[in-house]
Image 1 (tube, helix red, strand yellow):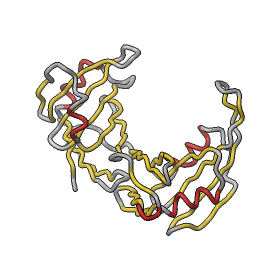
Image 2 (cartoon, one colour):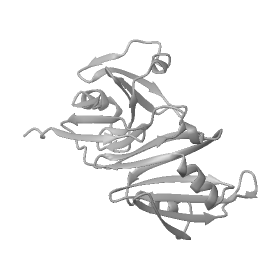
Image 3 (cartoon, helix red, strand yellow):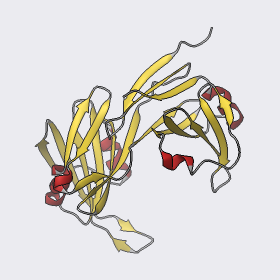
Image 4 (spheres, one colour):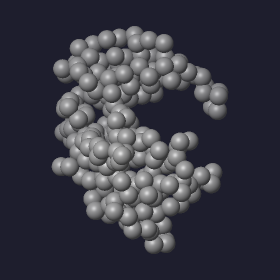
Length: 235
């Protein structure tokens, strides 16, 4: 019996919404990443499920959070750490911040900055939580702005790791020189990473998806499986 068609909508951090549909397992959570400049300094923010912040902190060797503040209809957790960088042989001052709402969280890492500096950066952003994800809205008057469209990152079993963004004119200049394969989902290109492992680019009408096969994926099966997936802008 053929699998039933699944449909999910994910919101990226710049407020764009993407509809994914097809006869695949689309139940895994997603994250969204966006770069923001605040008074000329670049900061990366990642949104995901509520537990993501603690997972990131543990991955950085942070045992717990030092501060907990009520902030904009959510809770702001702050941890300070001093990791040793083996490459530079220096001890760094790292601040890990997690804003947690009812279902989602926003994570960032700041180097050489204090909690007061963090609050200054956050004051330049409005954080909105929706059922399908978080969105941040920079305030140019406060010196904050987005660098580029946000991306969605999602793992799909038997397909791989997907990175989804809106199709832009910049993407056209990065397409491989050869003609892609026509699929029901869009034009599909295959290329190789620097380590020789394959990856795929799916250029649809209004979305751009990079697919990196994982351990449970046979690269030669990606094209047919992508034919079961639709990725499109949902407003």
